[in-house]
Length: 125
Image (cartoon, rainbow, N blue to C red; front, side, top):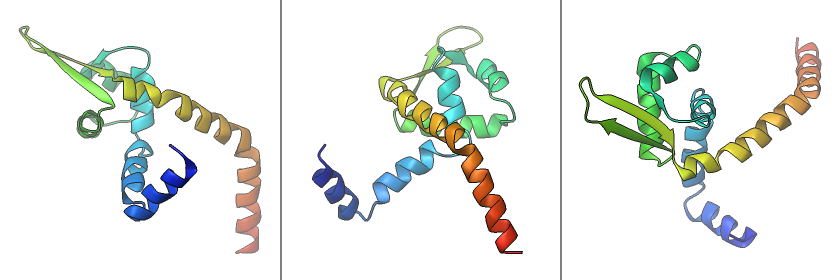
């Protein structure tokens, strides 16, 4: 998509579509879940154990939203008891490179950001 097409898309709906997608991707748990599932499909319990600090309810809600958005697939196996596995879709996998780039940017800029915060706090006390 060209820069012109990007600009038209943002102006067309006031950026609502992009904000909604970024809200989903940038929430507290999404990238942790996506990064965990990048290593392969997991059952709910295994995923819950590998994402520290997330409640079962928040994991359920986040997985539902990621499934709804086409980033995660949910497979139910007809077994007793039923087995459910979650995996990244191709769209979900395509999120890994930009997420890693953003994480690298954050790591690279932590010292500058922290010193800017300290300077700001000092000026505004």
